[in-house]
Length: 100
Length: 89
Image (cartoon, rainbow over all chains, first blue to last red; front, side):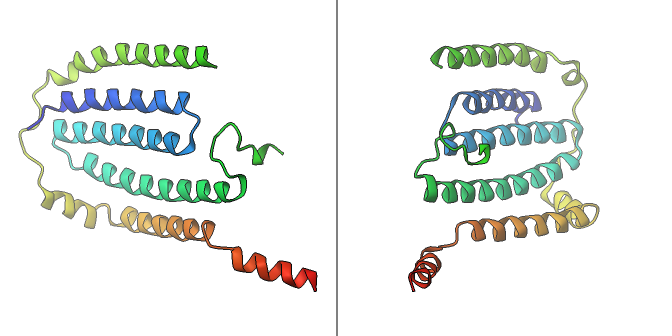
């Protein structure tokens, strides 16, 4: 069995990678993917806690987080498609529809 | 803009450099971890008994998200064409 400490460390590394992508990238899809990486990092921490304490609650929270992530990415991709059909771009600097 | 990107990258790397030793050397790992291995059966039983209501709510949320997403990406070309033709008449 993988030690939970390794899982938690991997979660921290993945979270920082996602954070870096969200802060530095301007492409909508890449930002969405980085948010997913951050969500999966949190899931890894839930799994590490569940393994360490021998409690099934962490797994249940992981399942819930995965389902919410699926819903979020479906709506996010749909929004990007709708924006692309009108603006011809999903560059986050150029999508300023809600400003006006 | 490039400078800000590099600053952000450095800051995130700094956060990681602080976070990793905090995780690795945390005192919670010193305590013996549970030896009882979790099984899929326990997980399924928990999902279907203790967590049944949240799972149902989650299913409704997922359905709403999928319906909303498919509504957002519906093809409006025919509707727009018909609307423009009616406007011309």
